[in-house]
Length: 482
Image (cartoon, rainbow, N blue to C red; front, side, top):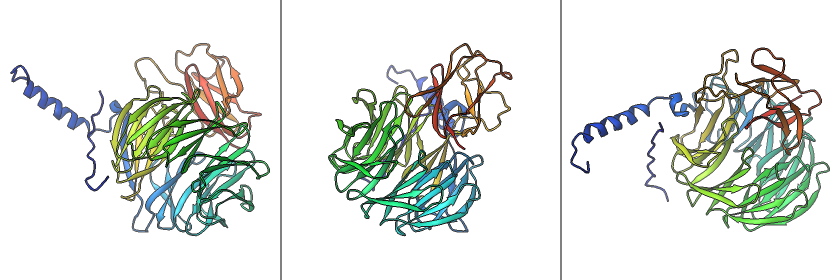
């Protein structure tokens, strides 16, 4: 049974055969829907678990707009335009556990998994605050360029790149000692970053110059500048085909760039007011949220063609992909809602009412929760999926769809050993581990000697980074740390 949701658009923003028995049946049906909408029940898979209000008696952030997730300690960090602080949320309990003083106007947050640090870009202070991921203390504050706007972490060389919107530059920070390595001049209005781990390149979208600067991640020099058209605002990297997608807000199209030779492959028409992109690595699709079209464009990552266009809520502005259940979440800013999309068939699963003006996401891969920053109501909506990873690892997995049991991996992130809980009916399908470039790292035949349905795999020789484990037709993403 699907939950029917009716969403009203805010005004301030742009019995046929005479059978009387149908009336009580219809009334019962309406009451059933009304009653069921009050139940945060596993029957509906997705539900609004709780709402976290970030301002409190001790003060806090106002207008939340930036997230990052610390997978080592299962913590969510959120910052906003006002409040000059970052709030830390416990990923297991959804409780606020710390308030960290930072600079003015948090525009971006980034987690360094190697050193377990969180970097906070303070737009009005022209600084980056470095936070200890264990005790939530401020390690240091780093002066950068004018109006720091975007952050990305290079795990190969342990560097953090900061795009300075009005400084027209990218500041490179050493992730070990938090010192500035260099500042790289780029185009005007540097507003978005993405890292290509296959070729160790960093791409910077320059909004006012209608260009993308390509930076060598090893020596931090500019390789080339690629002209795009026009108003580039979003970047995403497809590791399977080594392609970078650049979303252009002004023209409503997506430019596809070859990750090897930095040439433009093609231009794809998306929708009006394109604002953000996300990549689904399981089905190799790119999703584009289009503000003015009130829809999401789905692009085939293999042949760069448009698969379909999905109507969503009013003014879609943010996307996140849940790799555990292969779902895409779309925040509708003026619709005050989140549309949940099936990543396999690109159909709308449900629409969930959240706080006012949702504009950013964070996915908790351990509890399988999606956190939504509600800009105008200064709150965080927490969406839960019943088929997520269970907190109690000793509890047997619940049955899903009859006798079908999904496999589970933990801990995530992992250091030396990765445990896999296999379905009861596990056959001899191989377990395969791939890196983000799609390269096969390890393959193991099953079943092997293991405790019950649990199999442990050594990660010896596997470098820190993001990996994908595939068993049969299912894929899980996990992180390896030092």
